[in-house]
Image (tube, rainbow, N blue to C red; front, side):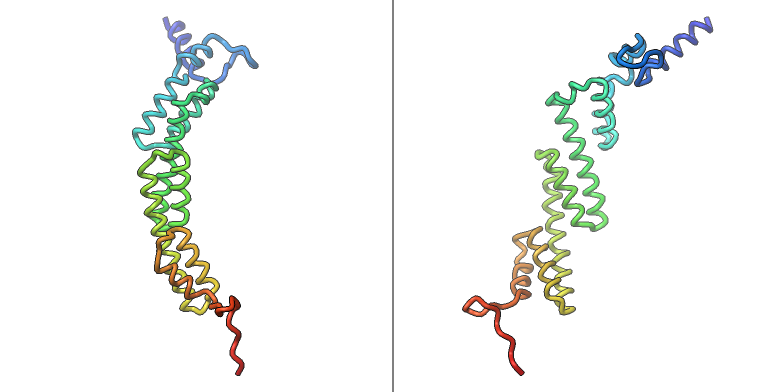
Length: 198
């Protein structure tokens, strides 16, 4: 009886391994075939674990499980429904990272992560909204930096900050006015005004 239990236990362990312990190359043992088709590391099982991880908000874990599923069934990578799951997991991971960065007031980086999220899943409304808010915040921060630079007499740096503010939010009227004020004035003929002689 003990020998039978030991054989069953060994078979279960071998079935749970991703590769075959008995054969190398393209041949695999029966236990490995069963594990690949029906076992705990099968694509269906991993897809299910990935879906569960997504429900729990663990996007990286979901991506890991989806990758494991593709390792067992490479054709799964071409499946449109599966690709939607992977895209949503990538979008969620980038969105979560964007939220972390926004919480640290790292607005430039947050905008990039939210853009990555929207790029992975254009239907992800929360990421779209977060990206819009982060762009406004980044614009406000760069406008404030531009004002600091202008007060310090660094008009070139100030203009660069005001331009960045406008890149993030083209409707930022204060940044637009500040940029116009920080740019060298041109005379009606199109040339910059000549310096006054003393």
